Length: 403
Image (tube, rainbow, N blue to C red; front, side, top):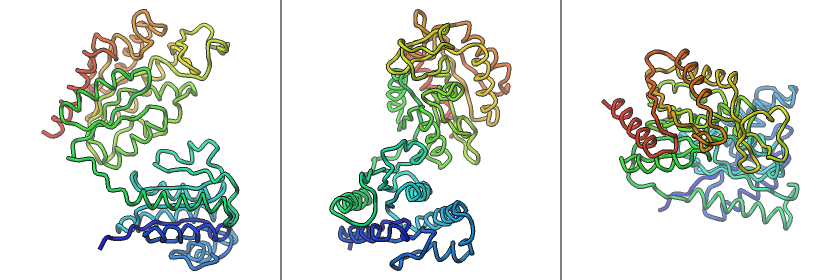
């Protein structure tokens, strides 16, 4: 007999009890088991849930007289611990929640405790807003409720039913990727797409699986988190551009504290390339260049433009990179293409500046731990000669680790 998949139905049952009970019934109607978890903080659930954190945490720890923010944080912590425990027993195959601003905050924070691949569906009244911090680095599916969530009517019922159908179907997914291969994380962004494509081809020809990450702030964070969970055998950090945008508040900012840091408890070889460290990408066009960048070299791209970094910014990045890599020197190498670090940074290109490149390299070496190997290559980052060397160097680092 086929085992039933279990979907955790998590929500503030004190204010959204009818809606979550409806989700439970619609999930069960599709042949799944629903495990209800009440995370409301104001009053008891209108129906008996499988796990009641209002009773166990708010009342059980005598938090009713605490501030609302303190109660919410306590419930989130308890729910995340509970979800991890149940998942560890193999008893959760998906999770769903519905709510407004607070409910969305609670639901998604709890969903983030589950690993990538476990279906996560959040029906939210605020899903049309900027959800970058709400979703973060997790594979959460946000579904806009359109109307407010207050009882079941012909519109909310249709939305919630489809959400129940979605998470039930997602939990039943059983696709497998085939024969397991060693996995290499590869960071990339638009200005070095050609390099990333070539490296992927080379590494796949060598028998590896390549997992690309868009180095857009969130992408780098996601890669670092998955590396710490043991997802990768190696990292080819082709696009370290996020550090430049973080410095200038650019389009790919938001790198987080883990970016380029060593992975404690794991030996994961990391080959680092200064891909995109020549520039910061900001949101302006040739029609509205900010006054402070009038004298800079600029690459007009689309609705974004890239500015060449100045000497102070270049030194700052060199010191940052060295400082981070020095914390785990045994697993790191650097590969520097002397012909340029992005599409616009090549001879004749709008951002080409070999003096600034040399200043970065000099400052980097001045601050870098002596045991970290630095290889300089007389080619551009997008050139086939460079991508072939980057791939073979990553392969060599992995074989050295295995040996």
